Amino acid sequence: MTKRTRTVLITGASTGIGECAAHRLDRMGWRVFAGVRREEDGLRVAANASHRLRWVLLDVTDPVSITGAIEFIGREISPGGLDGLVNNAGIAVGSPLEFVDLNALRRQFEVNVFGLVAVTQAALPLLRTAKGRIVNIGSVSGRVAAPMVGPYSASKHAVEAISDVLRMELGPAGIETSLIEPGSVRTPIWEKGAHSFEEAQTTFPAEAFTRYQMHFNLMEKVVRRGQKHGIDPERVVDKILHALTSKRPRHRYLLGRDARIRLVLQSVLPRRWMDGLVQRMIRKHGTPAT
Ligand SMILES: NC(=O)c1ccc[n+]([C@@H]2O[C@H](COP(=O)([O-])OP(=O)(O)OC[C@H]3O[C@@H](n4cnc5c(N)ncnc54)[C@H](OP(=O)(O)O)[C@@H]3O)[C@@H](O)[C@H]2O)c1
Image (cartoon, rainbow, N blue to C red; front, top):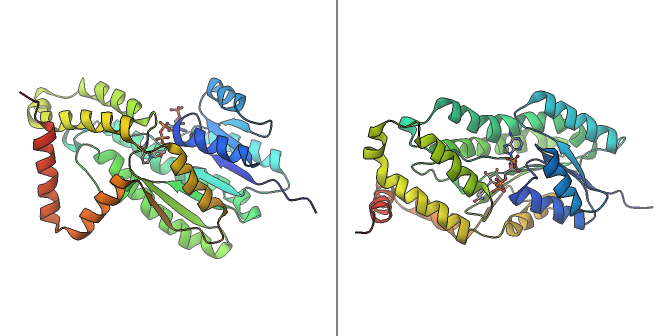
């Protein structure tokens, strides 16, 4: 009997972790549906892949786009189902909460949280058919919050809860849910986040700069560090693969030295000490060299 080709939908596959995952799974013989928002991204991703890979236009914030993508996939794989859904699409909104534009905060949740749930709901009939698996890309920021990335942290905290609930609700139906929690990964998200932060700064009132200048300076350093020293996205893909294929997928995959350090510190230090450490970091790295 010939083995059935396994099928997976990856959201946000135009760049970074999603693109790497699409290409690796394709090389491993999976039938990959790569969700992208622009045709040119789809063509580029497909150009570096086998004939099996299909790109689909998928904006996770747009119900019409989600329905269209899932209907397309359903037709392509009929009568089979989806073996995997990788909820990877994400954006990073940075700002002090005092001055965050509420539309930007909503957008953060539209993509990282509501989009994830909407795609999962739409894909569930296909996942049920194959007893497929859900892999959510969270972040260590979903466990350890930090100043300036409140919107992102809050969205990833929500993804933690959603992943736990999906695992408990869908586990009895044979659908496993895993959550990947990387620290810094070298992907375009840093540049995109920095760009949107620069734009946001133009809307901040003058007092934002007097109150948060050290935070802004630190943020610039954190972005440069992430771009330079973040782990290779292929390491995240290793965990995605484990979650999709292993007999016993883990509930959570924490990865990266920075992620482990942050989590350990938060677990062992009293809250007041942890907050003090954060303030020390802001003073040390946020004060311009004289
Ligand atoms: N890089 C890190 O340090 C890091 C650490 C922990 C967790 N993560 C998480 O990893 C995931 C992937 O991020 P990445 O680092 O690989 O960054 P990335 O290269 O910027 O990839 C993000 C992907 O999400 C897509 N996307 C954004 N808005 C979307 C929408 N409305 N609908 C559908 N797709 C949308 C982007 O598409 P466009 O190109 O069209 O914008 C892109 O394909 C995210 O969930 C992120 O939070 C990243």
